[in-house]
Length: 270
Image (cartoon, rainbow, N blue to C red; front, top):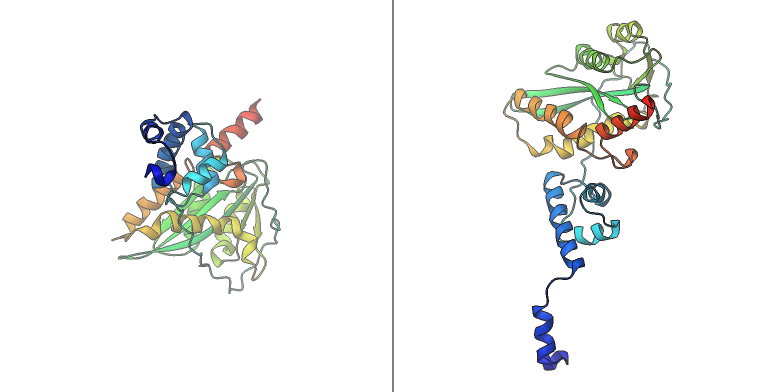
């Protein structure tokens, strides 16, 4: 071996027996953290992983990128499918949002949507209300029917939790649930302005739909639910424990909704 490599025997054994360098020790610690993060957040790419690692050990993005190539690859997100029915004759609200997704003040623009998850007991439907500024899911409701009561319950939770000031915009697709008189009355009574996507343009509500893509890719697609209660618990934990408090967002500078919300309110109070 030494002859093949053209090195001395003593030099070879010195190299074999040498202690790890400071850089190697640091990389070993970083790799251990990366593996721990990947186990908890299998869909995270380089940037959110780097943001998490930096809170423990200062390092460059390039270091995380190289170490993450050690057989650690993020899972791909599944495509999302629309569920609400926009084929009805109910009045449609104007599009006040117009794809202006950059909102700087909390509780000024909310978005909402509905999705479904299969269980052995039948379909479970979930409606959410999401703050476009903080990415926080401020309201949600689950049930076995996709009706106006579902979206009303989610909106009531958001209003009770956030107590928004008059003038807040709520944007959704043209689903009949959001066009119902009862839902519209709830918005009017709370001084909330209603906004709806243009016909045949799913990108107008992409921010709400993106949440369900994350929910399915990071949570529900990995489970077989025996009944709706199992699915409800998984979705509740995903929203309250993971999405709102642990999941990092590129649009928030790789902070979590809870971190970003705390930062904004501390700035507003200053």
